[in-house]
Length: 532
Image (cartoon, rainbow, N blue to C red; front, side, top):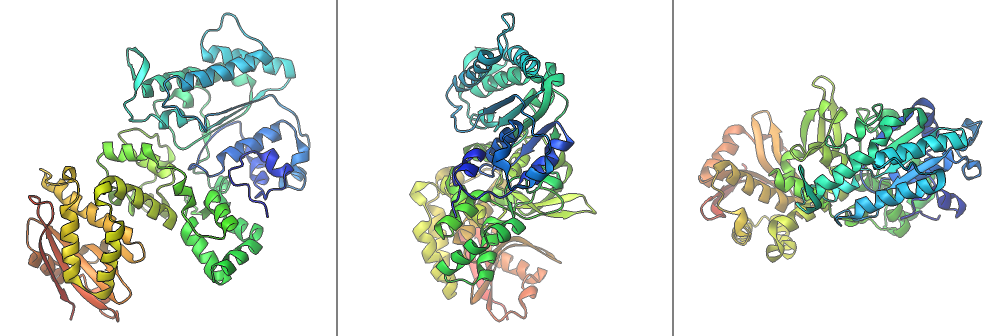
């Protein structure tokens, strides 16, 4: 089987015999029921392939669709004038990149359909082109815009200066936003010339007038009918790749059931609506099957720099966002802003819906799968701990200590490690920030261990346990205190009955109290005792 890794061209996939997971029944439903759409999906999730498929469909290239579902659904196969602009693959931190990209696109269309000598703005020039294309071909135009938001994501919160400073335009982010506003204003004037419009991207920006520039596009990002429009459903995985899954299992000494379970644990878990339909990451699945190896393919293709800037600027810790419930309304009519990053984090694919509470109308958000969890934690820890205190080798020693039940050694390891963390993370003046700092540090450490079951702020009938770590032979119940005593922490474990859920567990259970000092930036008291 030929895997189209890195290939986003539908015609090349079909002509060169690459495997294609048939999405054309959903595409036919899409084009038959509406005109203007917006679709948000994480990067490398198949958005560009979807756009390419639509482009070939509207160009009437029926020969490429032979044998696919749409071949029997579509009867007319009309050819429309298609305008396709792709913002992917360019670096918009370069001051003039967006302006040159838009100018080139508009000028190329004017070469084909003519230029209005009185039109000066991008919106007016493009509106004239759409009208002339409609007039020349006798058919309304199709507009496909891929990764519409990349010119803003590249520069969000970067502070890069604008090449032109005037009024409210001070940064490159302001400059790029104004160019996009002008470009998308074409749709205000051309509704009668539009047959079909699709914009794809990671998220929705309230500052860009694209969504008010024409009749409000239908946002199908959370529409359960189109959950599998991009990505691979479990049914598609098991039917299209049945033999390849068997080969993957044999290469890794696993049964077919074990292989499917690991694929699900590693690459599944994306949910885009209340129906909670499981969607696998297509980029990771194809790479895994091609190489017969379970690796972190999606996360390794790029560090989410804009996400890191958002978290830092909003003083957010990922452990305080993951594993919590949020009002569903925030994700139905969301508009991401720098001051409200959660919708962007969700739409970027670093958190996803893990549950829906109908009574409360809330979504539970958490990491989609192991690949994203481990990748995100690695990036966050690298930024947080810094190169000089990288925990890679240290983690192996900590694992040995915890697996052996050697808490005296773990105490020394933890105390020494915290003492080496960069000064900027220590000695917070605010007590709450001190507590957050230590909890976040401990959270990253335990998540980096990876192979153990780790529960942060685990709920019980009596309250929340700060942390529980389950090793093969030991279970550790941690309670943290700031500028207090370890004995006070142990007393809380006893008073709240935090160990009761493990009463029948055959492993040895340890209660561990840790007190952190805001003055020294490390452990000032550490005590432990086995549960009787």
